[in-house]
Amino acid sequence: MPVKILVVDDHEVIRTGLASLLSGDNLKVVAEASTSAQAVKLAGKHKPDVILLDLRLADSDGLEAIAKLKKAAPNAKVIILSAHENPTYVARAVACGASDYLLKSASRSELLTAISAAAAGKSPSSVGKLAAIAQAMAKREAVDVDDGAIWLTGRETQVLRHVALGLSNKEIGHALEISIETAKEYVQNLFRKLSVTHRTQAAVWAMKRELV
Image 1 (cartoon, rainbow, N blue to C red):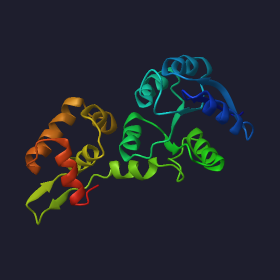
Image 2 (image 1 turned 90 degrees about the horizontal axis):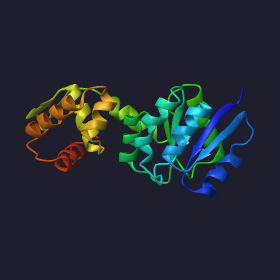
Image 3 (image 1 turned 90 degrees about the vertical axis):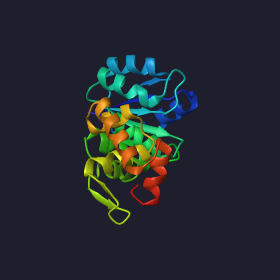
């Protein structure tokens, strides 16, 4: 059976172009949506295997729509298709449960590779931007910093990477499968250990020491 695809983008030209680009090759675009509300409704109706989702939608942030889409179609894999090559966006996509993150400049071959991998439940494709960020976010090793002046546990180092990548406490909690309150406690404890007062300072601290 062909892989069923839902295309979600607020630009008609892009939706039409993707539908044409993906015709054949055992793929079938079953529906197109321009808003997250439409996408959720169509996902529930068609139960697609893969959802190609833009970051910017007319009625919401595309990433915020992922949870609703997965609730409507639990088995669907979400691939972010964006014009923005920003590590924070990619990290947020990881935290929200996206299967891959491709740029709109990707070739047809790269797009097909990503769709095939996602539909088969495989790891993020090497052609996308998600794999490397996901691996970095998953690292959980304790570190000695500044000649032993500061010791970070494996979980603290992991949370620090999430902070440096721009994730909120809610997104950190979702990514690490911990409560928002627990994520907040980790962040506040990191601030005390690093002698910083806000997330930007923590991010700069981590980057200077090549922890991200």
